[in-house]
Image (cartoon, rainbow, N blue to C red):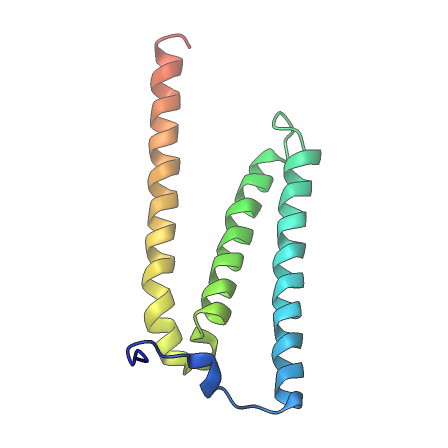
Length: 122
């Protein structure tokens, strides 16, 4: 007896070779871009010392590059890039605001803890 609750979706995809080539090109482009951003992040972390005056800039660049990677992953792999611009904003803007809020809280609380530790002699 054949089960009818298992649906093989890959059998329903019908496209020609040109569409397949475009899809593979898009996958390689996404992979290359995400790899390049990751290599830049690792290089910044590996070659710039934490005691350097540039370290503050490196930390902010980590945050920015991570947000770029996250947005790009959502746009490509969750197919949000194919939607209308207003829907993209409705979905991504609250997340962006929330992330900025979390960063603000982290910096504020980190400075407060640092000041408290300095006050007691650490």
